[in-house]
Image 1 (cartoon, rainbow, N blue to C red):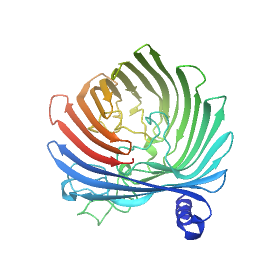
Image 2: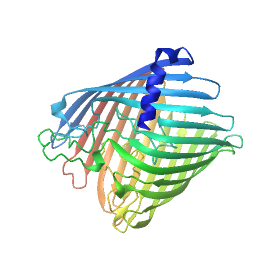
Image 3: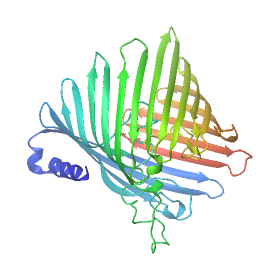
Length: 400
């Protein structure tokens, strides 16, 4: 897949090839300042530059090429996941790489993508790009989406490699520790690539007013971190309904997982997500359970924890004893402003022990379609109020 990405890059950018097809060029950027206040405080500054080329070679064949370059500052004040210096982790490493490079076959009844690409299923809880970070996660994969009925589809994907947020320089031959290269070794959790032999299947049925049903089966076989390999089967039901000025939103989801490398079976997942909106306001509540037994818990290694388990990222991967996450949220939006806040209560799933609480707040100002300024605040208070963690992210984005 990497050879395909490199070949597609050379093909798309060559002068002879540029004259053959129709091409659309675009670019975007995001500048970020991040700060961590805790027992060990730190800060980081980074700039993402992204260039994109969409090419149509015929009515059936097209391609996408996207290249990212990330520059960083304040390196002595933070670790970034590729490089560690005993400062707080802010995982926006420096580097340049091909973010996407894939061919598309566009048929009447199907779309097929081959190469490095974004794969975002539903809300990205199980499969997604972690797009909040400067270096998003993409996949070397084949993806085929087949149309069903009038507005439904079935999707299959084979993933050969996950290009993770830590970047290509975070390889197993580089420990990332500035003072310890003699016996360099990097934990699998911080590798920039995870080789996969993974199969994803998803069925979306969307033929009724207001409701949508999704069923999925994922076999995730992670060759670089076998402990997170799993078979997961689940289904979700979503209702969006508006009665006069009142809007209702309901999402119910359940799944079961077997972590075959750990011999842990029947790990449950449950979600109840309710929203109630009037005019520019929405009040929501969310209760998510990632269950545990046999010394292991339900995991989502190809999804995003940042978006769902608190923006302070203190929960991280699911604890072995599982996690219960109850949250209350309030959203207000009136163009060009958007304000979102949530309060999380985290508990151990096995015995209900309190883990901590977190308050999150997001301000977004979008004066024009391509410009956005956001301020994200997170405050995590562990049980016993020992060692609270506060994080701030200030972003300016153009065309992202």
